[in-house]
Amino acid sequence: MTTLTGAGEVLKAGKHVCKVQYKLQQRETTSGHVGISGEVVVDEGERRAVNVLNTMQSGELLTLRLDDNRSLEVFFNPRDAINGVWRVVVGPGSAALA
Image (cartoon, rainbow, N blue to C red; front, side, top):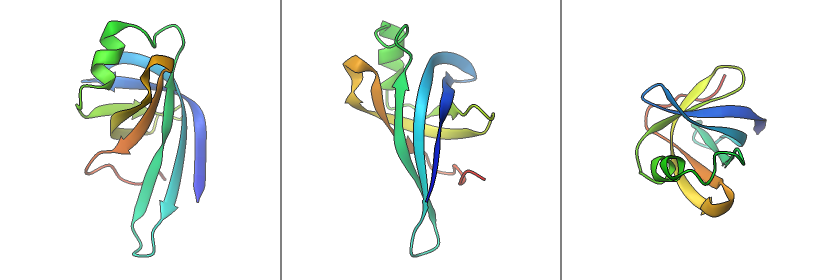
């Protein structure tokens, strides 16, 4: 298992939605597939903005850009939306992080 942490950014159609701190775990399953799971915490200055809340909970496929410029296509599920904590759900077609 590999754990990745850092500062990243959520994008919608290439445009900034919010800054986040992320913690992702990458695991290889017994069938040889790679699974990625984790959470993001939205920057305190942006977490209560209506457009950020609406976008994060929209169910739309968004981009999570990591601090090393790698990206994942993801959905977000609220864990504690008021405090800016969201679960990362990797979208179809997102490759494992190299």
